[in-house]
Length: 204
Picture (spheres, rainbow, N blue to C red):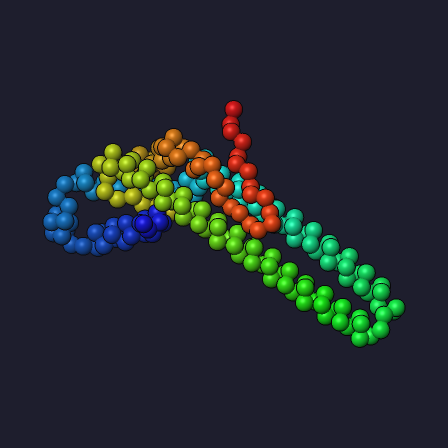
């Protein structure tokens, strides 16, 4: 299934083609004016104001904070180890020191690569969570569009001007909250060696 952003872009292209067609083509393609009703939606607000979207953001922030704390802890440990090695250098044979220093540098490089991989993994999981959000909210949006007799749903960011009555963002937020809630119980983010972010606390 294509994501909502892809579907909305396709709808916008369809609308542009309709607008550029001659009047005769309009009459032929859309015999029923009610079927050409257009609705708009603010996708950013869906992510920021629905329970599911807020949960994604909260878990992402928690996972990011946990990874940052782990990076600081590792950095502190490596700094202490480097200082200790520097202090021991005068008492060691040059070859012995070089062997230990090379091992330390190799280990530091491996640790940095592993932490960078975790950061990339977190970014990929964030993108997957948003993709899942739009896939699961699509049926809810489609039901609203069909109930209102519309045939096109556009991202409000692509629309220069519209009447408030065609914006379904508020209705979509309420319907998504009612249908999907926070989107399930399983954590959306997981990184090796770090605890899974907890679910948001229920509201009173």
